[in-house]
Amino acid sequence: MKLLVATDGSNNALRAVDYAVGMLGKLNEPGSITLISVHDDTALRNARRFLGKDVVEDYLRELSETDMADARKHLDEAGIPYECITRTGHVASELTRAAADGGFDIIVLGSKGRTALKDFVIGSVARRVAELSPIPVLLIR
Image (cartoon, rainbow, N blue to C red; front, side, top):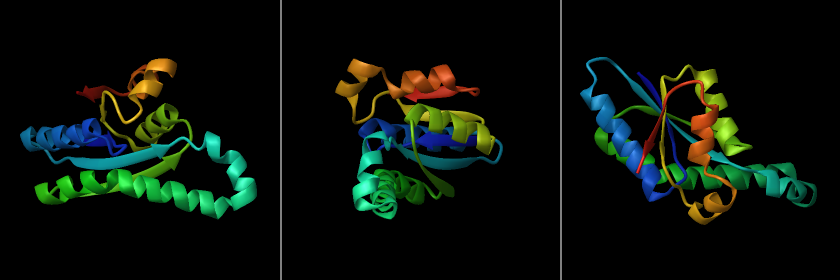
């Protein structure tokens, strides 16, 4: 089973990673985990004109690396091999696109990330992923 596990560095995202590890442990078949971090770059599009494309891309890549650091530690400690994907764009759209492109069996993500207040106002990423996804989505609390 191929699991795509979204992480944003939040505690709920880390719980999703741990749950995915547990799922793989219970399967009687080989499985894999791919971590994905997606950052919405909409607000930074104008910054590209002033700072340059490379500066903005490096900044977003560093954010993604920071977001995945604890998740990577947990996977390393569990002895689970994994891959990492970083993307920019609309978070829910990019998550579902990566799931479809990569042939994943399920998307695992925390039900709330770091942006709980923002989600209340404009709608949660988890809800949008569940609406858009062509594959099952497992939300972890």
